[in-house]
Image 1 (cartoon, rainbow, N blue to C red):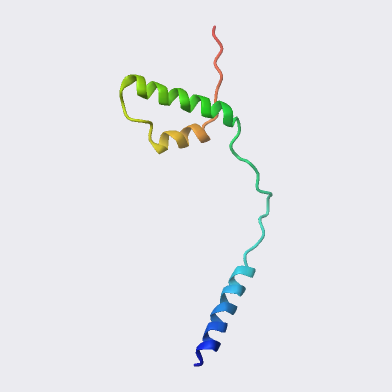
Image 2: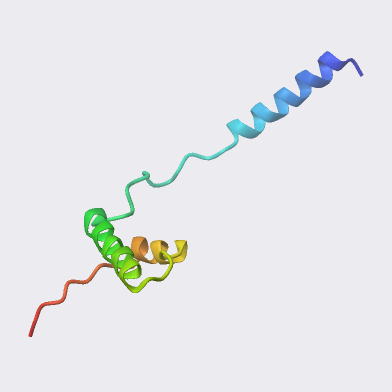
Amino acid sequence: MDPDIAEFQRAATVLRFLSDIPTPSQPIRDYVTDIDERCALFGEMQELHQSLGIGPPIAATLAFFMVAPPRKFESI
């Protein structure tokens, strides 16, 4: 087979694949809420780690801070 024809067929296959991707059914939006509060809480966690002389929080800890709902506690 002619190399130019083979290249054209590969390009056509890629274009068919890319044009077959469905559009999102829902609009993409910002899913992380209260980002300032979350950053402040994570900063406090980093300071606590430093004051205790242990290593920095791991990535899983950051993930927890990004997905868990922040709660506000009032003194009784």
